Amino acid sequence: MRRIHRTRRDWAADLALFLFAACFAAVSSRSIPVAEGLGAGWRAADQVAGGLGCAAVLLRRRLPVELAVVLLLAGSVAHYLTGPAMVAVFTVAATRPWKATAWVAALVFGPLPLFLWRLPDMPEDRAGSAVTYFALIAGAIGWGLFRRSRQQLIASLRERAELAEADAQSRAERARMEAREEIAREMHDVLGHRLSLLSVHAGALEFNPGAPRAEIERAAGVLRESAHLALHDLREVIGVLRAGQGTGPGEGGERPQPELADLPRLVAEARAAGGRIELAGPPDGAAAPPLAGRTAYRIVQEALTNVRKHAPGASVDVRVTGSPGDGLTVEVRNTRPPGPDPAHGPLPAAAVGGGQGLIGLAERARLAGGELTALPVGGGFRVRAWLPWQVRPGDEGEGLG
Image 1 (tube, rainbow, N blue to C red):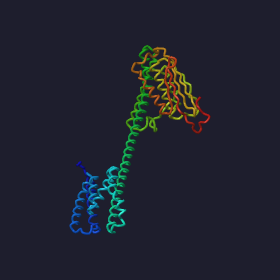
Image 2 (image 1 turned 45 degrees about the horizontal axis):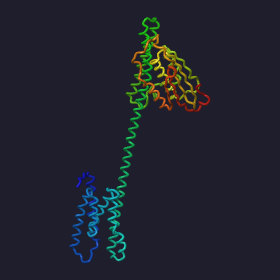
Image 3 (image 1 turned 135 degrees about the horizontal axis):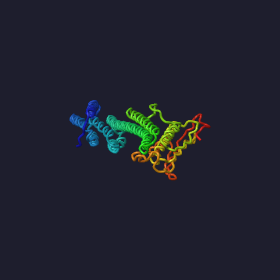
Image 4 (image 1 turned 45 degrees about the vertical axis):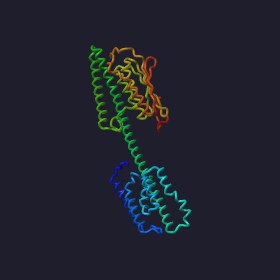
């Protein structure tokens, strides 16, 4: 016999059902019909069987089906077993599979057609007792089925709640990961740009130590300013990480983000480092959406940084076109590098990345709803991105040419 671990609640339920079976037998004792020729001995034996049946109720968790079968068969001759039989069939209907419940129900109601056929010839008291018996057993089975359906519903609702909680935790974790990835992209773009400028100017001083004093002072000033801006950007990104913000750096008013109108300033910084850059656009007109403008700025920034790393001395052509409804197109194309820059010298090996910048740019464009391609063209390299630009009230007739 398998061991059953019962909680206090289980023991309370078992004792309550035991008392129910005993009280039912006591209350219904006067209504039990006694056949002629059977005396007090028969009633005493019936009461003993009823007492044993009530005690057997405590086994309902271990052997529910077996207990129900024994009590139903014995209950056909021992009337005091009706209460324990009701508890047994209730337990089967509430806890056992549908197949077991169906077999027990068939055992109960199998004699019903014969009983109905003989009903007109039966004494009134015995007919009433039999009808009451079938009704009570049917009620016990129905209540057990209701109890099982309710338990299954509660289990289903609990499972749904657990799944919803797990899904919420998963979505929160994804949101944190996306925020950290955004911070990592921001750090890569901003610091990569600043540090590449530092490398260019430091390389110029190392390659040309005999340069005029004014040029050395200008390069030193650019180095100091670039280092100051890099440290400032690093403090802001670390501040966002410590604050545990759920959004990327700069969102929610924590830090001003670059816009499409800041491209001329970015190009001017790159030219000050010795780059040969031509900028076409963006002309005056409707302002691009903040997300598209910021993404376009970062694409140009990373592309110029890559030119300084991998193609020093190459000329760069930056074109920004678009209009509301047609989208924003950004193209950065550089020519074949002429070799080591005679003015600045080669970049240190540590300044050359591993291609993570382009991967980050493609992800940026995808998150903004656009797409990005980067491939060699004519000995040089071209980065081209398209970003969506939704039409807003007031944008009609305006755009980027």
